[in-house]
Length: 331
Ligand SMILES: [Cu+2]
Image 1 (tube, rainbow, N blue to C red):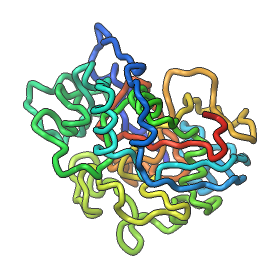
Image 2 (image 1 turned 135 degrees about the vertical axis):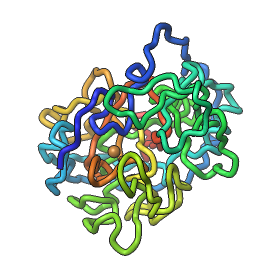
Image 3 (image 1 turned 30 degrees about the vertical axis):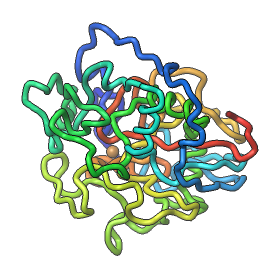
Image 4 (image 1 turned 90 degrees about the horizontal axis):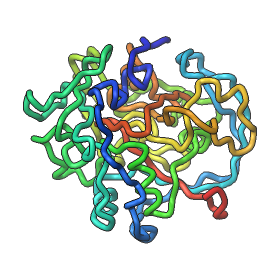
């Protein structure tokens, strides 16, 4: 299955790059270093432990998107690490902001990307639409506290994943929490839950076998979401079932930022022990797909699927989870 390539940061149109949505004449001074303080005790998310392991990284199902570089398959060894069992939630992120006064990039730029069916904003708030993906609105006033635009809020959504956080914002949180983002290899290993070679965290059964197993898009993308899985946008982080390592919703719900720069050719020269990705790049890796992935259009809700966006981009369907090495290495 292939997906259309578009002019956004991501080939699937699932995550629009900030500068493709609204022409940026000036860049606000964003300072992730303002995230001072020690929040390591406040980071109270349940941890899943991924044991030291060797696994096969990449797509073996044949459902890959050729442009994404999901092959060649290669063996990867990793030391044991702990990883958040869920995405960082609104409640978790609020503790960070309260402790540090951190201002996200969506707030600094004054806008973020909202999916058109979810919009709760005024018409004049729509600042731009990225070419090729008209279902994204660059929306003034959209940020982590207003996920669907200025007329929305996160009331009652403490246990939903925080969204509209850029890679830089996620880094700032990690610095505060004494954690870091997973490498792409760690993320994939964790998502597989010990099922080497499986397409999904639960195995190879399709996403709608015996009821829904992940929060993706059902209906006619992008105009009509039947909400058969129960959710138009985000779901609480402990929805559906955890995988073999105890991780919830690595696929679907929200994309998750990884530490690595993105390059579709990475796997051709990846070291077999603890790969960290290319040394430089323009975009950071995103993993796991989101509530916007639809099997007719974008099948990136798979363990091996890869996407990317620029580090200052933010949208209503991307968040993150954090890791730490069990033995303290690779801080
Ligand atoms: Cu997608």
